[in-house]
Image (cartoon, rainbow, N blue to C red; front, side, top):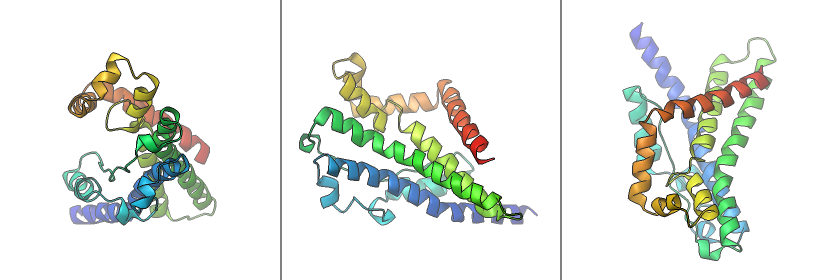
Length: 214
């Protein structure tokens, strides 16, 4: 029986991988697309303005970490290769950098909404494919998490760009300019008591999606 449970879990994980790669690819494409529209062709010239996941894969964040988190039974972790943006190319560096930054998280919220629609359509007929519904709900959960997590005002997350542009002279912004301090702050936050409050916000959003679906 234990072997069957592991097999089912592995099957679910493998089925979720396309959703995972799609979610990361759309996130990075959104950054690249908005940057291009606002005057910076850097990502487009490097072939990053695409939904092809191979262009966005980070061998550690997109391959190694998801499998490690699966086999260790921990929280599902993964990320894509960041899209390069040259702020100096943007039409209005301050405003456009904010728009480029929020484009990724907003795209994940949209994906969560699209997956929710598919779930509703599958729930209508009796005997809808339960396994597909589970995979799609994992997609909703993952994208809601990405939406909120990336808005945290800590480097290298997208939310840090918003703070740096809105409050460039603040003490916090000056601290954020140090990659080492930003990474340290992020790890401290994840392993602090505040993390459970962040997860509560994620769960609140998921309950809203569940109410809409049902």
